[in-house]
Image (tube, rainbow, N blue to C red; front, side, top):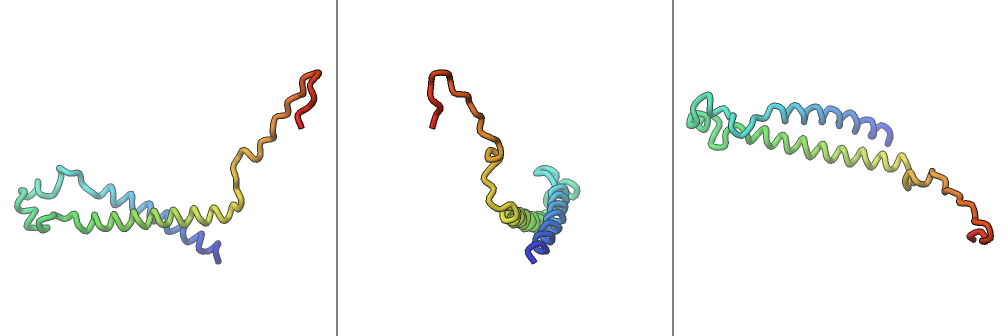
Length: 107
Protein backbone atom coordinates (compact mmCIF):
# COMPACT_ATOMS: atom_id res chain seq x y z
CA UNK A 1 0.00 0.00 0.00
CA UNK A 2 2.78 2.41 0.91
CA UNK A 3 4.59 1.61 -2.33
CA UNK A 4 1.47 2.51 -4.32
CA UNK A 5 1.12 5.84 -2.50
CA UNK A 6 4.82 6.49 -3.15
CA UNK A 7 4.42 5.87 -6.89
CA UNK A 8 1.27 8.01 -7.08
CA UNK A 9 3.09 10.82 -5.24
CA UNK A 10 5.92 10.66 -7.79
CA UNK A 11 3.53 10.79 -10.76
CA UNK A 12 1.66 13.74 -9.24
CA UNK A 13 4.97 15.45 -8.46
CA UNK A 14 6.18 15.22 -12.07
CA UNK A 15 2.84 16.45 -13.44
CA UNK A 16 2.83 19.26 -10.88
CA UNK A 17 6.39 20.28 -11.80
CA UNK A 18 5.52 20.49 -15.51
CA UNK A 19 2.37 22.45 -14.69
CA UNK A 20 4.31 24.84 -12.45
CA UNK A 21 6.88 25.47 -15.19
CA UNK A 22 4.10 26.18 -17.68
CA UNK A 23 2.28 28.57 -15.35
CA UNK A 24 5.43 30.51 -14.58
CA UNK A 25 6.25 30.82 -18.28
CA UNK A 26 2.72 32.08 -19.01
CA UNK A 27 3.01 34.94 -16.56
CA UNK A 28 4.03 38.30 -17.92
CA UNK A 29 6.61 40.70 -16.62
CA UNK A 30 5.73 43.83 -14.67
CA UNK A 31 5.81 46.20 -17.62
CA UNK A 32 4.25 44.03 -20.31
CA UNK A 33 0.63 43.83 -19.27
CA UNK A 34 -2.36 43.68 -21.57
CA UNK A 35 -2.90 47.36 -20.88
CA UNK A 36 -0.29 48.35 -23.42
CA UNK A 37 -2.31 46.74 -26.23
CA UNK A 38 -5.57 48.50 -25.36
CA UNK A 39 -4.39 51.58 -23.57
CA UNK A 40 -3.96 51.49 -19.81
CA UNK A 41 -7.53 52.45 -18.91
CA UNK A 42 -9.15 49.91 -21.24
CA UNK A 43 -7.30 46.99 -19.68
CA UNK A 44 -8.38 48.01 -16.23
CA UNK A 45 -12.02 48.13 -17.24
CA UNK A 46 -11.70 44.90 -19.18
CA UNK A 47 -10.13 42.82 -16.38
CA UNK A 48 -11.07 44.92 -13.35
CA UNK A 49 -8.79 47.23 -11.42
CA UNK A 50 -6.25 44.50 -10.66
CA UNK A 51 -6.01 43.29 -14.25
CA UNK A 52 -6.09 39.62 -15.17
CA UNK A 53 -3.54 38.63 -12.57
CA UNK A 54 -5.69 37.36 -9.72
CA UNK A 55 -6.57 33.93 -11.14
CA UNK A 56 -3.15 33.05 -12.47
CA UNK A 57 -1.44 34.35 -9.33
CA UNK A 58 -3.67 32.30 -7.05
CA UNK A 59 -3.30 29.24 -9.27
CA UNK A 60 0.49 29.62 -9.17
CA UNK A 61 0.43 29.80 -5.37
CA UNK A 62 -1.73 26.67 -5.12
CA UNK A 63 0.48 24.71 -7.50
CA UNK A 64 3.66 25.87 -5.72
CA UNK A 65 2.31 24.85 -2.31
CA UNK A 66 1.27 21.47 -3.73
CA UNK A 67 4.79 21.08 -5.15
CA UNK A 68 6.31 21.71 -1.72
CA UNK A 69 3.90 19.30 0.01
CA UNK A 70 4.58 16.55 -2.52
CA UNK A 71 8.33 17.12 -2.17
CA UNK A 72 8.05 16.69 1.59
CA UNK A 73 5.92 13.55 1.26
CA UNK A 74 8.41 11.98 -1.18
CA UNK A 75 11.31 12.90 1.13
CA UNK A 76 9.56 11.23 4.07
CA UNK A 77 8.94 8.08 2.04
CA UNK A 78 12.61 8.03 1.01
CA UNK A 79 13.73 8.45 4.63
CA UNK A 80 11.57 5.49 5.69
CA UNK A 81 12.78 3.42 2.75
CA UNK A 82 16.46 3.99 3.54
CA UNK A 83 16.07 3.29 7.25
CA UNK A 84 18.79 4.16 9.73
CA UNK A 85 21.07 6.12 7.44
CA UNK A 86 23.71 7.92 9.46
CA UNK A 87 25.98 9.15 6.70
CA UNK A 88 28.57 8.11 4.20
CA UNK A 89 31.47 8.28 6.64
CA UNK A 90 30.32 5.08 8.39
CA UNK A 91 31.43 3.08 5.35
CA UNK A 92 34.97 4.48 5.34
CA UNK A 93 37.35 2.32 7.39
CA UNK A 94 39.33 4.09 10.05
CA UNK A 95 42.95 4.59 9.02
CA UNK A 96 45.26 2.43 11.05
CA UNK A 97 48.38 4.23 12.14
CA UNK A 98 51.39 2.12 12.99
CA UNK A 99 52.71 2.54 16.49
CA UNK A 100 56.05 4.32 16.68
CA UNK A 101 58.93 2.18 17.84
CA UNK A 102 59.44 2.35 21.54
CA UNK A 103 55.93 3.56 22.25
CA UNK A 104 53.13 1.27 23.28
CA UNK A 105 50.10 1.03 21.00
CA UNK A 106 47.17 3.19 21.90
CA UNK A 107 44.48 1.32 23.88
